[in-house]
Length: 419
Ligand code: NAD
Image (cartoon, rainbow, N blue to C red):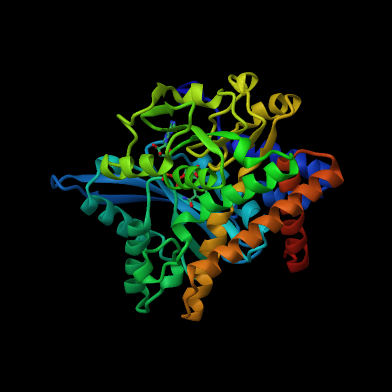
C-alpha cells in the first residue's frame, strides 16, 4: 500500500511548499509570510485514561490553532495511531485556507489524539474524549475554537465534547462543536456535506472540461464519510463508479458498482468493504486506473512522485486532505491532469459546520433543502472564484486556491494590525 512507501513524507512540507509558491506569486511581504507559515498556537497534553481492564494509559492529545484572524478557529479532531504534530499543523493550516476560500468567518485549527479508535471500547473512547475536553477547556469555545469530527471521530465524539464542555462552563453550549447528533443541535445535511461539496466541485470541473457526467467513469479511494457519500452522489449525477476502496483494499467492476448496495454492505459488515462482491484490486491499482475522474477520499500522501507518472485520469477531485504530496504536483501538471484541490473540493463540510454553528446561535433550525441549497451555492461560487484566479495568474487550481486564501487572510491581518 502506498502508505508504506510514504513514511518519509510529511504533509506539513507539502503545505509549506505550496504556501511558499503561492506567496511568491502573490508577492506576499515577509511579515505576512512569517505570520502565516507557522501556527499561532500549539497545545500538547498528556491524557491519563483508565482502560476497561483497569489499567491506566497515557495518551497524547494535540490541538493546533493555525490562525484566528478571520474569526474563531475551526477544525476537526482526528483519532489515529498515525497522528503527528506536523500532520495536525498541516491540517490546521489547510482549515485556514479552506475557510477563506468558501468565505466563512473562521480561522483554522485541527486536533488529534494518538490512539487506535477501532480497538477501543465506547467507554474508553468516551473517557478519552472527556479527558481531552477538560485539558482543552481554555482552548475550545463557541467564540474561540470549534472542533468537529475527522477520521476516527464522529457525532458521538462531538456529543461527549459538547456535554463535558457544557458541564465545565455551567451553560448548555451546543455551538462549541459541530457535527453533533441532530437532537443535540446538529444540522440536517452535515453528515453528507463534504461528499456533497465534492460532487458539486466535480460537476463544476466536468462542465469546464466539457465532459458529460453520464459518459464519464470514476474511481473513489476511501469509503468512509467523504468517499461513500461522494461515490453515491456522483453515481446519482450519472457517473459510472467502476472502483471503490477502503483500508481492506480495492473493489472493481468495469460495468459499474452499485453504490447503494456497497453502502448497505458496509452497514451490515462492521463498517468495511471486506468480502464485497467485485474484482479485488489494491489501493495502488485503483489510483492508476484509466478513469475520467479520480476521487482520493481516504488520507494524505496517496499520490506521490512514486506513482504520479502512472496516474491515467483526466481529473482529480481531492476529497481527502492532502492526498497528493507536493512532490507529485509538477509531474501531474506536466501530464495536464486537472486537479480540484482539497482546500476547495472538501470545503463543503466546514461550510455546513458553519451553518450548524449559526443555527445553534440563532436557536432556529433550517430544513435540509435550505442547508443543501445554500451550501451548493457557496461551493459553486468558490469553485468559480478559484477558476477565475487560476486564469488570472495562469496557474493551477491548487496554486490559485492558495493565492486566493493567503491574500484574504493576509489582508485581514494587515487591517487588524499587530503590536
Ligand atoms: P472516515 O474515517 O469516515 O473514512 C476513511 C476511509 O478511508 C475509510 O473507508 C477507511 O477504511 C479508508 N482508509 C483508511 N486508510 C486507508 C488506506 N491506507 N488506503 C485506502 N483507504 C484507507 O474519514 P472521512 O471523514 O471520510 O475522512 C477522509 C478524508 O477526508 C480525510 O483526509 C479527512 O481529513 C478528509 N475530510 C473529511 C471531512 C469530513 O467532513 N468528514 C471534511 C473534509 C475533509
